[in-house]
Length: 499
Image 1: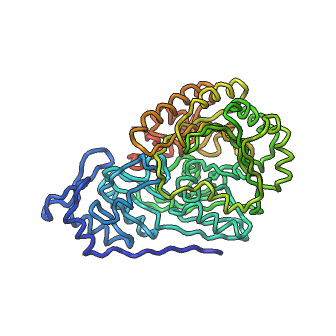
Image 2: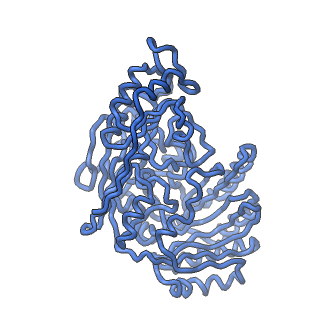
Image 3: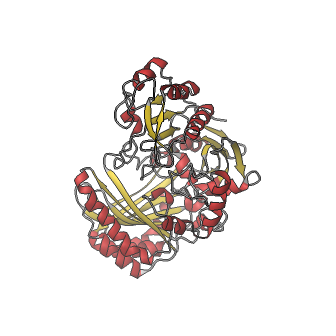
Protein backbone atom coordinates (compact mmCIF):
# COMPACT_ATOMS: atom_id res chain seq x y z
CA UNK A 1 0.00 0.00 0.00
CA UNK A 2 1.07 3.58 -0.61
CA UNK A 3 0.47 6.08 2.19
CA UNK A 4 0.68 9.86 2.24
CA UNK A 5 0.66 11.14 5.83
CA UNK A 6 0.57 14.76 7.01
CA UNK A 7 1.25 16.14 10.47
CA UNK A 8 0.87 19.61 11.93
CA UNK A 9 1.83 21.29 15.21
CA UNK A 10 -0.55 22.04 18.08
CA UNK A 11 -1.26 25.54 19.41
CA UNK A 12 -0.21 26.08 23.00
CA UNK A 13 -2.61 26.72 25.89
CA UNK A 14 -1.03 30.13 26.32
CA UNK A 15 -1.61 31.19 22.70
CA UNK A 16 -5.23 30.00 22.86
CA UNK A 17 -5.87 31.97 26.04
CA UNK A 18 -4.29 35.00 24.45
CA UNK A 19 -6.82 34.73 21.66
CA UNK A 20 -9.76 34.25 24.02
CA UNK A 21 -9.03 37.26 26.18
CA UNK A 22 -9.09 39.78 23.36
CA UNK A 23 -11.53 38.50 20.79
CA UNK A 24 -13.24 41.07 18.59
CA UNK A 25 -15.46 40.79 15.53
CA UNK A 26 -18.04 38.02 15.43
CA UNK A 27 -17.25 36.77 18.93
CA UNK A 28 -17.50 39.34 21.75
CA UNK A 29 -16.24 38.34 25.21
CA UNK A 30 -17.82 39.71 28.35
CA UNK A 31 -15.28 38.75 31.03
CA UNK A 32 -13.69 35.51 32.18
CA UNK A 33 -16.10 34.91 35.03
CA UNK A 34 -19.29 34.96 32.96
CA UNK A 35 -18.84 34.01 29.32
CA UNK A 36 -16.02 33.93 26.81
CA UNK A 37 -17.70 34.24 23.45
CA UNK A 38 -20.87 34.44 21.41
CA UNK A 39 -21.78 32.04 18.62
CA UNK A 40 -24.81 31.13 16.52
CA UNK A 41 -26.83 28.04 17.37
CA UNK A 42 -27.90 25.58 14.69
CA UNK A 43 -31.41 26.92 15.13
CA UNK A 44 -30.31 30.55 14.65
CA UNK A 45 -30.34 32.09 18.13
CA UNK A 46 -27.21 33.41 19.86
CA UNK A 47 -25.44 31.25 22.45
CA UNK A 48 -22.63 32.02 24.87
CA UNK A 49 -19.53 29.88 25.31
CA UNK A 50 -17.33 30.15 28.39
CA UNK A 51 -13.57 30.22 28.45
CA UNK A 52 -13.67 26.77 30.04
CA UNK A 53 -15.82 25.52 27.16
CA UNK A 54 -13.26 26.62 24.64
CA UNK A 55 -10.36 25.26 26.67
CA UNK A 56 -12.15 21.92 26.86
CA UNK A 57 -12.39 21.92 23.08
CA UNK A 58 -8.71 22.72 22.61
CA UNK A 59 -7.65 20.11 25.16
CA UNK A 60 -9.74 17.47 23.41
CA UNK A 61 -8.11 17.80 19.98
CA UNK A 62 -4.51 17.78 18.79
CA UNK A 63 -5.06 20.35 16.04
CA UNK A 64 -5.46 24.09 16.61
CA UNK A 65 -8.67 25.80 17.64
CA UNK A 66 -8.71 29.14 15.82
CA UNK A 67 -10.66 32.13 17.12
CA UNK A 68 -11.25 35.54 15.51
CA UNK A 69 -8.22 37.10 17.26
CA UNK A 70 -5.78 34.51 15.98
CA UNK A 71 -3.11 35.79 13.60
CA UNK A 72 -4.11 33.04 11.17
CA UNK A 73 -7.88 33.51 11.50
CA UNK A 74 -8.40 35.40 8.24
CA UNK A 75 -6.27 32.91 6.36
CA UNK A 76 -8.04 29.94 7.95
CA UNK A 77 -11.56 31.22 7.21
CA UNK A 78 -10.97 31.99 3.53
CA UNK A 79 -12.60 29.76 0.96
CA UNK A 80 -11.81 29.27 -2.72
CA UNK A 81 -14.61 31.58 -3.89
CA UNK A 82 -13.89 35.14 -2.66
CA UNK A 83 -17.56 36.03 -3.12
CA UNK A 84 -17.99 34.29 0.25
CA UNK A 85 -16.86 36.24 3.34
CA UNK A 86 -18.00 34.24 6.35
CA UNK A 87 -16.76 34.83 9.90
CA UNK A 88 -17.04 31.70 12.06
CA UNK A 89 -16.80 31.96 15.83
CA UNK A 90 -14.62 28.83 15.99
CA UNK A 91 -12.52 26.91 13.49
CA UNK A 92 -11.40 23.51 14.76
CA UNK A 93 -8.65 22.11 12.54
CA UNK A 94 -8.73 18.35 12.98
CA UNK A 95 -5.79 16.13 12.12
CA UNK A 96 -7.06 12.76 13.41
CA UNK A 97 -10.27 10.78 13.67
CA UNK A 98 -10.27 11.43 17.40
CA UNK A 99 -10.06 15.17 16.73
CA UNK A 100 -13.07 15.01 14.42
CA UNK A 101 -15.08 13.02 16.95
CA UNK A 102 -14.24 15.44 19.78
CA UNK A 103 -14.98 18.54 17.70
CA UNK A 104 -18.27 17.09 16.47
CA UNK A 105 -19.27 16.13 20.01
CA UNK A 106 -18.49 19.67 21.19
CA UNK A 107 -20.56 21.19 18.39
CA UNK A 108 -23.48 18.89 19.12
CA UNK A 109 -23.38 19.33 22.89
CA UNK A 110 -23.53 23.12 22.50
CA UNK A 111 -25.88 22.99 19.47
CA UNK A 112 -23.61 25.28 17.44
CA UNK A 113 -24.30 25.97 13.78
CA UNK A 114 -21.69 23.70 12.18
CA UNK A 115 -20.04 23.44 8.78
CA UNK A 116 -17.66 20.79 7.50
CA UNK A 117 -14.74 21.96 5.40
CA UNK A 118 -12.61 19.72 3.19
CA UNK A 119 -11.15 21.60 0.21
CA UNK A 120 -13.24 24.76 0.68
CA UNK A 121 -14.42 24.74 -2.95
CA UNK A 122 -18.15 24.90 -2.41
CA UNK A 123 -19.29 27.91 -4.43
CA UNK A 124 -21.92 28.88 -1.87
CA UNK A 125 -19.49 28.88 1.04
CA UNK A 126 -21.09 25.94 2.86
CA UNK A 127 -17.70 24.90 4.25
CA UNK A 128 -17.58 27.87 6.63
CA UNK A 129 -20.28 28.50 9.27
CA UNK A 130 -20.92 32.23 9.51
CA UNK A 131 -21.03 32.91 13.24
CA UNK A 132 -20.88 29.20 14.03
CA UNK A 133 -18.25 26.46 14.17
CA UNK A 134 -16.30 25.03 11.26
CA UNK A 135 -14.85 21.55 11.59
CA UNK A 136 -11.93 21.85 9.21
CA UNK A 137 -10.68 18.52 7.82
CA UNK A 138 -7.94 20.02 5.65
CA UNK A 139 -5.25 18.60 7.96
CA UNK A 140 -6.84 15.15 7.86
CA UNK A 141 -5.42 13.93 4.57
CA UNK A 142 -3.99 10.71 3.26
CA UNK A 143 -4.55 7.98 0.69
CA UNK A 144 -3.76 4.27 0.92
CA UNK A 145 -3.88 2.22 -2.28
CA UNK A 146 -4.60 -1.49 -2.25
CA UNK A 147 -3.31 -2.41 -5.71
CA UNK A 148 -4.35 -6.05 -5.55
CA UNK A 149 -7.99 -5.18 -4.84
CA UNK A 150 -8.02 -2.04 -7.03
CA UNK A 151 -9.25 0.27 -4.29
CA UNK A 152 -8.15 3.51 -2.63
CA UNK A 153 -8.85 4.36 1.01
CA UNK A 154 -9.12 8.14 1.16
CA UNK A 155 -9.25 10.21 4.35
CA UNK A 156 -12.15 12.62 4.47
CA UNK A 157 -10.08 15.82 4.28
CA UNK A 158 -8.06 14.77 1.24
CA UNK A 159 -8.03 16.76 -1.98
CA UNK A 160 -8.17 15.33 -5.48
CA UNK A 161 -4.44 15.82 -5.94
CA UNK A 162 -3.81 13.42 -3.06
CA UNK A 163 -5.96 10.81 -4.79
CA UNK A 164 -4.45 11.32 -8.25
CA UNK A 165 -0.85 11.38 -7.04
CA UNK A 166 -1.40 8.13 -5.14
CA UNK A 167 -3.06 6.27 -8.03
CA UNK A 168 -1.97 7.59 -11.45
CA UNK A 169 1.74 6.64 -11.05
CA UNK A 170 0.58 3.08 -10.30
CA UNK A 171 -1.35 2.91 -13.58
CA UNK A 172 -4.68 3.23 -11.76
CA UNK A 173 -7.39 5.90 -11.82
CA UNK A 174 -10.94 6.82 -10.95
CA UNK A 175 -13.22 9.79 -11.66
CA UNK A 176 -11.73 12.70 -9.72
CA UNK A 177 -12.98 16.13 -10.74
CA UNK A 178 -11.21 18.74 -12.87
CA UNK A 179 -9.48 20.97 -10.27
CA UNK A 180 -6.86 19.20 -8.19
CA UNK A 181 -7.28 21.18 -4.97
CA UNK A 182 -11.01 20.35 -4.71
CA UNK A 183 -11.91 18.33 -1.61
CA UNK A 184 -12.74 14.67 -2.11
CA UNK A 185 -15.42 14.91 0.59
CA UNK A 186 -17.61 17.34 -1.33
CA UNK A 187 -17.01 15.71 -4.69
CA UNK A 188 -17.62 12.13 -3.60
CA UNK A 189 -20.88 12.86 -1.74
CA UNK A 190 -22.30 15.29 -4.34
CA UNK A 191 -22.23 13.18 -7.56
CA UNK A 192 -18.61 13.81 -8.60
CA UNK A 193 -17.98 14.71 -12.21
CA UNK A 194 -14.64 14.59 -13.98
CA UNK A 195 -12.67 13.89 -17.15
CA UNK A 196 -13.16 10.11 -16.85
CA UNK A 197 -16.84 10.06 -15.87
CA UNK A 198 -18.09 8.99 -19.31
CA UNK A 199 -15.92 5.87 -19.22
CA UNK A 200 -15.82 5.17 -15.45
CA UNK A 201 -19.04 6.73 -14.12
CA UNK A 202 -19.57 9.47 -11.56
CA UNK A 203 -17.42 9.43 -8.44
CA UNK A 204 -20.44 8.27 -6.39
CA UNK A 205 -20.73 5.25 -8.70
CA UNK A 206 -17.24 4.19 -7.64
CA UNK A 207 -17.60 4.65 -3.88
CA UNK A 208 -17.64 1.10 -2.50
CA UNK A 209 -18.19 2.22 1.05
CA UNK A 210 -17.65 4.99 3.59
CA UNK A 211 -16.89 5.44 7.25
CA UNK A 212 -19.14 8.18 8.53
CA UNK A 213 -19.57 9.96 11.85
CA UNK A 214 -23.28 10.55 12.39
CA UNK A 215 -24.71 13.39 14.51
CA UNK A 216 -25.53 11.01 17.37
CA UNK A 217 -21.82 10.19 17.72
CA UNK A 218 -21.72 6.80 16.03
CA UNK A 219 -18.85 6.02 13.65
CA UNK A 220 -20.41 3.68 11.12
CA UNK A 221 -19.32 1.65 8.14
CA UNK A 222 -21.83 2.08 5.31
CA UNK A 223 -21.74 -0.05 2.17
CA UNK A 224 -23.98 -2.35 0.15
CA UNK A 225 -24.41 -4.76 3.07
CA UNK A 226 -23.95 -2.59 6.20
CA UNK A 227 -26.16 0.43 6.82
CA UNK A 228 -27.12 0.24 3.17
CA UNK A 229 -29.70 3.03 3.48
CA UNK A 230 -27.00 5.41 4.67
CA UNK A 231 -24.68 4.20 1.89
CA UNK A 232 -27.41 4.92 -0.64
CA UNK A 233 -28.05 8.43 0.71
CA UNK A 234 -24.47 9.61 1.09
CA UNK A 235 -23.82 8.92 -2.61
CA UNK A 236 -25.37 12.12 -3.93
CA UNK A 237 -26.98 13.39 -0.74
CA UNK A 238 -23.95 15.45 0.31
CA UNK A 239 -23.21 16.09 3.98
CA UNK A 240 -26.82 15.68 5.11
CA UNK A 241 -26.13 12.58 7.20
CA UNK A 242 -22.80 13.18 8.93
CA UNK A 243 -19.06 13.58 8.38
CA UNK A 244 -17.43 11.05 6.07
CA UNK A 245 -14.05 10.23 7.56
CA UNK A 246 -12.99 7.70 4.93
CA UNK A 247 -13.99 6.81 1.39
CA UNK A 248 -13.34 3.43 -0.19
CA UNK A 249 -13.13 4.17 -3.91
CA UNK A 250 -12.88 1.71 -6.79
CA UNK A 251 -9.91 2.03 -9.14
CA UNK A 252 -9.34 0.97 -12.74
CA UNK A 253 -6.33 0.15 -14.91
CA UNK A 254 -5.39 3.34 -16.69
CA UNK A 255 -2.78 4.51 -19.21
CA UNK A 256 -1.77 8.00 -18.02
CA UNK A 257 -0.95 9.21 -21.55
CA UNK A 258 -4.10 10.90 -22.86
CA UNK A 259 -4.99 13.34 -25.63
CA UNK A 260 -5.90 16.91 -24.67
CA UNK A 261 -8.23 18.69 -27.12
CA UNK A 262 -8.99 22.38 -27.73
CA UNK A 263 -10.38 24.07 -30.89
CA UNK A 264 -11.25 27.79 -30.76
CA UNK A 265 -13.48 29.52 -33.33
CA UNK A 266 -14.78 33.06 -33.96
CA UNK A 267 -17.84 34.08 -31.96
CA UNK A 268 -19.86 34.17 -35.19
CA UNK A 269 -19.70 30.36 -35.12
CA UNK A 270 -21.33 30.04 -31.69
CA UNK A 271 -24.57 28.36 -32.78
CA UNK A 272 -22.68 26.05 -35.14
CA UNK A 273 -20.24 25.10 -32.37
CA UNK A 274 -23.12 24.04 -30.13
CA UNK A 275 -24.74 22.09 -32.97
CA UNK A 276 -21.45 20.37 -33.83
CA UNK A 277 -20.96 19.44 -30.20
CA UNK A 278 -24.45 17.92 -30.14
CA UNK A 279 -23.66 15.94 -33.31
CA UNK A 280 -20.39 14.65 -31.85
CA UNK A 281 -22.18 13.48 -28.71
CA UNK A 282 -23.93 10.83 -30.79
CA UNK A 283 -20.75 9.28 -32.18
CA UNK A 284 -17.83 9.74 -29.77
CA UNK A 285 -16.73 6.76 -27.63
CA UNK A 286 -17.05 6.86 -23.85
CA UNK A 287 -13.31 7.41 -23.62
CA UNK A 288 -13.79 10.89 -25.10
CA UNK A 289 -15.16 13.70 -22.96
CA UNK A 290 -16.12 16.97 -24.69
CA UNK A 291 -17.59 20.32 -23.77
CA UNK A 292 -18.20 23.46 -25.77
CA UNK A 293 -19.43 26.97 -25.49
CA UNK A 294 -18.78 30.69 -25.50
CA UNK A 295 -16.16 32.32 -23.31
CA UNK A 296 -14.92 35.85 -22.77
CA UNK A 297 -11.28 35.94 -21.73
CA UNK A 298 -9.61 38.34 -19.32
CA UNK A 299 -8.95 40.82 -22.13
CA UNK A 300 -12.63 41.01 -23.01
CA UNK A 301 -12.29 38.93 -26.21
CA UNK A 302 -15.23 36.61 -26.81
CA UNK A 303 -14.95 33.42 -28.83
CA UNK A 304 -16.32 29.88 -28.85
CA UNK A 305 -14.65 26.52 -28.56
CA UNK A 306 -14.89 22.74 -28.33
CA UNK A 307 -12.46 20.95 -26.05
CA UNK A 308 -11.93 17.98 -23.82
CA UNK A 309 -9.83 14.87 -23.54
CA UNK A 310 -9.56 11.38 -24.96
CA UNK A 311 -8.13 8.34 -23.20
CA UNK A 312 -6.32 7.23 -26.32
CA UNK A 313 -3.83 8.33 -29.00
CA UNK A 314 -3.99 11.71 -30.72
CA UNK A 315 -4.31 10.19 -34.20
CA UNK A 316 -7.46 8.32 -33.23
CA UNK A 317 -8.95 11.43 -31.60
CA UNK A 318 -8.39 13.43 -34.78
CA UNK A 319 -9.98 10.73 -36.95
CA UNK A 320 -13.12 11.01 -34.81
CA UNK A 321 -13.21 14.82 -34.63
CA UNK A 322 -11.97 16.04 -38.01
CA UNK A 323 -15.05 15.22 -40.14
CA UNK A 324 -17.22 17.31 -37.81
CA UNK A 325 -14.88 20.16 -36.91
CA UNK A 326 -13.87 20.82 -40.52
CA UNK A 327 -17.44 21.92 -41.20
CA UNK A 328 -16.85 24.85 -38.85
CA UNK A 329 -14.09 26.30 -41.01
CA UNK A 330 -10.60 27.31 -39.96
CA UNK A 331 -10.20 27.59 -36.18
CA UNK A 332 -8.55 30.59 -34.58
CA UNK A 333 -6.41 28.26 -32.49
CA UNK A 334 -5.93 24.51 -32.26
CA UNK A 335 -4.30 22.49 -29.51
CA UNK A 336 -4.46 18.71 -29.67
CA UNK A 337 -1.61 16.70 -28.23
CA UNK A 338 -0.78 13.75 -26.02
CA UNK A 339 -0.11 14.71 -22.40
CA UNK A 340 0.34 13.14 -19.00
CA UNK A 341 -3.03 12.79 -17.27
CA UNK A 342 -1.66 13.89 -13.91
CA UNK A 343 -0.51 17.14 -15.52
CA UNK A 344 -3.89 17.55 -17.24
CA UNK A 345 -5.67 17.19 -13.90
CA UNK A 346 -3.96 20.37 -12.71
CA UNK A 347 -4.31 22.45 -15.87
CA UNK A 348 -7.46 24.25 -14.66
CA UNK A 349 -6.33 24.70 -11.06
CA UNK A 350 -5.68 28.42 -10.93
CA UNK A 351 -4.91 29.86 -7.51
CA UNK A 352 -5.65 27.96 -4.33
CA UNK A 353 -7.76 30.96 -3.38
CA UNK A 354 -9.36 32.41 -6.52
CA UNK A 355 -8.75 36.08 -7.25
CA UNK A 356 -12.18 36.59 -8.79
CA UNK A 357 -15.58 36.00 -7.24
CA UNK A 358 -17.65 33.31 -8.95
CA UNK A 359 -21.34 32.63 -9.49
CA UNK A 360 -22.93 29.67 -11.31
CA UNK A 361 -26.21 28.54 -12.75
CA UNK A 362 -26.52 25.01 -14.08
CA UNK A 363 -28.99 22.39 -15.17
CA UNK A 364 -29.44 19.11 -17.05
CA UNK A 365 -30.67 18.31 -20.54
CA UNK A 366 -31.80 14.84 -21.58
CA UNK A 367 -32.06 15.93 -25.20
CA UNK A 368 -30.50 18.65 -27.34
CA UNK A 369 -31.32 19.99 -30.78
CA UNK A 370 -30.78 22.92 -33.14
CA UNK A 371 -33.45 25.00 -31.46
CA UNK A 372 -31.61 24.77 -28.15
CA UNK A 373 -28.30 25.58 -29.84
CA UNK A 374 -29.71 28.72 -31.46
CA UNK A 375 -31.40 29.92 -28.27
CA UNK A 376 -28.30 29.43 -26.11
CA UNK A 377 -26.03 31.03 -28.71
CA UNK A 378 -28.29 34.08 -28.81
CA UNK A 379 -27.79 34.67 -25.09
CA UNK A 380 -24.20 33.49 -24.92
CA UNK A 381 -22.96 35.94 -27.55
CA UNK A 382 -24.18 38.79 -25.35
CA UNK A 383 -21.59 37.71 -22.78
CA UNK A 384 -19.06 40.50 -22.32
CA UNK A 385 -17.96 39.74 -18.76
CA UNK A 386 -14.24 38.80 -18.60
CA UNK A 387 -13.59 35.20 -17.63
CA UNK A 388 -17.22 34.16 -18.00
CA UNK A 389 -18.64 31.34 -20.11
CA UNK A 390 -21.82 29.62 -21.27
CA UNK A 391 -21.24 25.98 -22.09
CA UNK A 392 -22.54 22.44 -22.42
CA UNK A 393 -20.64 19.45 -21.06
CA UNK A 394 -21.30 16.01 -22.53
CA UNK A 395 -22.55 13.44 -19.98
CA UNK A 396 -24.12 10.02 -20.78
CA UNK A 397 -21.73 7.09 -21.28
CA UNK A 398 -21.26 4.93 -18.21
CA UNK A 399 -22.95 7.60 -16.08
CA UNK A 400 -26.22 6.59 -17.74
CA UNK A 401 -25.75 2.86 -17.07
CA UNK A 402 -26.99 3.16 -13.49
CA UNK A 403 -30.61 3.02 -12.38
CA UNK A 404 -32.07 6.39 -11.26
CA UNK A 405 -32.81 4.98 -7.80
CA UNK A 406 -29.51 3.12 -7.30
CA UNK A 407 -27.97 6.19 -5.65
CA UNK A 408 -29.44 9.43 -4.35
CA UNK A 409 -28.67 11.11 -7.70
CA UNK A 410 -31.57 10.40 -10.07
CA UNK A 411 -30.82 12.20 -13.36
CA UNK A 412 -29.20 9.32 -15.21
CA UNK A 413 -30.78 10.22 -18.53
CA UNK A 414 -28.78 13.45 -18.72
CA UNK A 415 -27.06 13.93 -22.08
CA UNK A 416 -25.60 17.39 -21.38
CA UNK A 417 -25.04 19.60 -18.39
CA UNK A 418 -25.47 23.30 -19.04
CA UNK A 419 -23.50 25.84 -17.02
CA UNK A 420 -23.20 29.58 -17.12
CA UNK A 421 -20.57 31.02 -14.82
CA UNK A 422 -19.47 34.59 -14.22
CA UNK A 423 -16.45 36.06 -12.44
CA UNK A 424 -15.57 39.50 -11.10
CA UNK A 425 -12.75 41.06 -9.11
CA UNK A 426 -14.51 44.37 -8.36
CA UNK A 427 -17.50 43.86 -6.05
CA UNK A 428 -19.34 46.65 -7.87
CA UNK A 429 -19.45 44.41 -10.95
CA UNK A 430 -21.09 41.52 -9.09
CA UNK A 431 -24.78 42.42 -9.55
CA UNK A 432 -24.48 42.81 -13.33
CA UNK A 433 -22.58 39.51 -13.65
CA UNK A 434 -25.11 37.66 -11.53
CA UNK A 435 -28.00 39.14 -13.49
CA UNK A 436 -26.44 37.93 -16.75
CA UNK A 437 -26.09 34.39 -15.40
CA UNK A 438 -29.63 34.35 -14.01
CA UNK A 439 -31.15 35.82 -17.17
CA UNK A 440 -29.33 33.31 -19.37
CA UNK A 441 -30.44 30.39 -17.23
CA UNK A 442 -34.02 31.70 -17.10
CA UNK A 443 -34.10 31.68 -20.90
CA UNK A 444 -32.64 28.17 -21.15
CA UNK A 445 -34.28 26.43 -18.19
CA UNK A 446 -37.68 25.80 -19.88
CA UNK A 447 -35.86 23.62 -22.42
CA UNK A 448 -34.00 21.64 -19.74
CA UNK A 449 -35.05 18.31 -18.23
CA UNK A 450 -34.90 19.51 -14.62
CA UNK A 451 -32.47 19.17 -11.76
CA UNK A 452 -28.96 20.47 -11.24
CA UNK A 453 -25.51 19.43 -10.04
CA UNK A 454 -25.75 19.98 -6.28
CA UNK A 455 -22.07 20.93 -5.99
CA UNK A 456 -22.77 24.00 -8.15
CA UNK A 457 -25.87 25.13 -6.28
CA UNK A 458 -26.29 28.63 -4.86
CA UNK A 459 -28.82 28.67 -1.98
CA UNK A 460 -31.51 26.58 -3.66
CA UNK A 461 -35.00 26.63 -2.17
CA UNK A 462 -36.84 23.54 -1.01
CA UNK A 463 -38.78 23.26 -4.28
CA UNK A 464 -35.54 23.33 -6.27
CA UNK A 465 -33.98 20.70 -4.00
CA UNK A 466 -37.01 18.47 -4.48
CA UNK A 467 -36.56 18.88 -8.24
CA UNK A 468 -32.85 18.08 -7.97
CA UNK A 469 -33.57 14.75 -6.26
CA UNK A 470 -36.86 14.05 -8.09
CA UNK A 471 -38.20 10.59 -7.27
CA UNK A 472 -35.48 9.97 -4.69
CA UNK A 473 -36.39 12.91 -2.47
CA UNK A 474 -38.84 11.11 -0.18
CA UNK A 475 -36.39 8.28 0.44
CA UNK A 476 -33.70 10.84 1.31
CA UNK A 477 -36.07 12.32 3.88
CA UNK A 478 -36.49 8.85 5.40
CA UNK A 479 -32.69 8.46 5.68
CA UNK A 480 -32.44 11.95 7.16
CA UNK A 481 -35.08 11.05 9.75
CA UNK A 482 -33.04 8.01 10.76
CA UNK A 483 -29.62 9.64 11.08
CA UNK A 484 -30.20 13.37 11.60
CA UNK A 485 -33.80 13.94 12.78
CA UNK A 486 -32.84 17.31 14.32
CA UNK A 487 -31.33 18.54 11.04
CA UNK A 488 -28.05 19.39 12.74
CA UNK A 489 -26.30 18.87 9.38
CA UNK A 490 -28.04 21.73 7.61
CA UNK A 491 -25.24 23.72 5.93
CA UNK A 492 -25.61 21.85 2.65
CA UNK A 493 -28.16 21.34 -0.09
CA UNK A 494 -30.45 20.53 2.76
CA UNK A 495 -32.80 17.57 3.02
CA UNK A 496 -35.16 18.59 5.78
CA UNK A 497 -36.39 15.81 8.08
CA UNK A 498 -40.08 15.41 8.74
CA UNK A 499 -41.27 17.30 11.80
